Image (cartoon, rainbow, N blue to C red):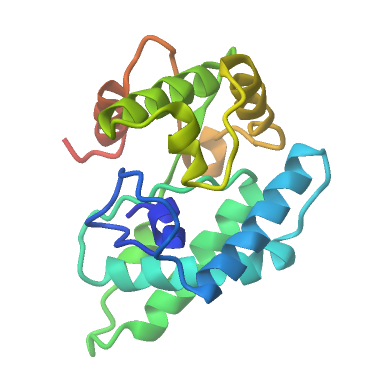
Length: 208
């Protein structure tokens, strides 16, 4: 379940991992995404953001995840939740929604109550470097220049150095995963591609 695809208006499961632009997003999704972006920007500027401020932007995402979990065992959701308090809030909110949807008369435990967070911890700016490589690869696959590719998302291409600086800035306010909090922490390494990371995550989750 790709949270970014959800906000773009695509199918978060069928379109997971794709770059589809945001043309399909409804007005409600755009409004919710605006709240999310505003809060991210606050974090990047060193400003604390309460869970109450995140709620209007993430309520729909939580409901969509809860709905998908009813029909997909071992659902893996990808989305950036920077703070531990926010991760706990999302787990609680998705669980509440899921329990409200549950109709099993025997009271079987909701699958959402098994939620675990895998947190990709960055070191030395590796996340930014990996993301830039990924974006360039996708642009080439679409036969687009970088200017054309990032333009699909309402952004302006300003070159590698500026992009790395912006991607690095987007890590500010991030709280690394901690084992004592019931989170699974995975350290990103620049030399490992996405497939290696996915294999590692699947192993840590017990899915392989």
